Length: 347
Ligand SMILES: NC(=O)c1ccc[n+]([C@@H]2O[C@H](COP(=O)([O-])OP(=O)(O)OC[C@H]3O[C@@H](n4cnc5c(N)ncnc54)[C@H](O)[C@@H]3O)[C@@H](O)[C@H]2O)c1
Image (tube, rainbow, N blue to C red):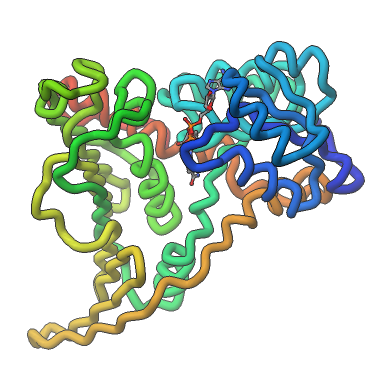
C-alpha cells in the first residue's frame, strides 16, 4: 500500500545534489514548489553548493550526506540529482528508508540497478520515478499529435542522433565509469521520445562502439576511462519497426536534426528551433511544412507526481517506464563488446 497525502503542501521534498552545471537542484525545488509541495531539505557533498542552496531557499535543512538527512529529517520525497553512477545506491537507500524517490535521468546505468530500486520501492510502499521532464518537450508532443492524427502513417523507423566532431568536455559526463557511456546522457531522452511512438516490445538490440581516439589525445582529462568516441544502438521491435540511436564525437559532417521519424505517409524531422514534415505521393514531388516547436510542458512531471500521491491518479513515469531505455543501453553496451546483436526478453 502506497502512502498518500491529503494535500500537496504536506508532501515535504528534498534533493540530493545541488550542482552548478545547470543549477538543476534549484530547478527541481522550484518545480516541486510550483506543483504545491514543500521544499524542505538539500544534501550536497560540496559545502559551497550547500551555501548556494541556503541562499536560494532560506531556512531549508542542509546535510552533507544522505545518511544524515535520513536520520534527522522527516522529508517525504527525495530527488537524486547526482552523476549517473551514484543514482542506484542513493535511490536504494532512500526507498529502503520509506521515502518516495525520484532519480534524475538516466534512472541508473544497468538494468539490474533499475530492478533493485523498483523492488525496494515496492517493498517499502513508496514511489520510484525518473525525472523524464523531456517526456513533455514541445517537439515530441507535436510528433505524437501528428502520429495520432494519421499524418505520418505507420512509423517504419526512427533515427536519433546527437553530436559532431568535438573533443569531450572535462566534466564527469565524459568519464565512462561515471556517466555509463556516451549514450547515457542525451541518448536516454531520445530513446524515451521514441518509446512513446513505438509501443511494440523490443526483441533485439545491436550495439556498436568506437573507442580510443579522444582517449589518446595528450590533453585527455579521463584517459582510458573516456567515453566511447561514438556509439550506436539499433533496436528491433516485434512489429518490425526499428530505432537507430547514434551519439558521436567524431562525425565532422553530421546530418541535420536530432530525431527523424520515417512514416509510410510522411517523414518528420525535428531540429532545435523547429520541425518539418515532408509528404510524398510517390511521383517524385514532395511537400514540406515547417513549424516552430511548441512550448515544452516539463512542469507536468511533478504535477503528475502530486496528483498520484494526493488523488491516486496514474503515475506517468513509472520505474518500469524509466527502466526501458536503460535496458536498451545496457544490452547495447554488452552487444558492442560481444560484437553481435543480442536478444531482449523484456523491454
Ligand atoms: N532532465 C534534464 O533535462 C537534465 C539536465 C541536466 C542534468 N540532468 C541530470 O542531472 C544529474 C546531475 O547532473 P548535473 O549537470 O546537475 O551535475 P553537476 O555535476 O552539476 O551536479 C552534481 C552534484 O552532485 C553532487 N554530489 C555527487 N555525489 C553526491 C552525493 N553522494 N551526495 C550528495 N551530493 C552529491 C556534486 O557535489 C555536484 O554538486 C545527472 O543525472 C544528469 O544527467 C538532467
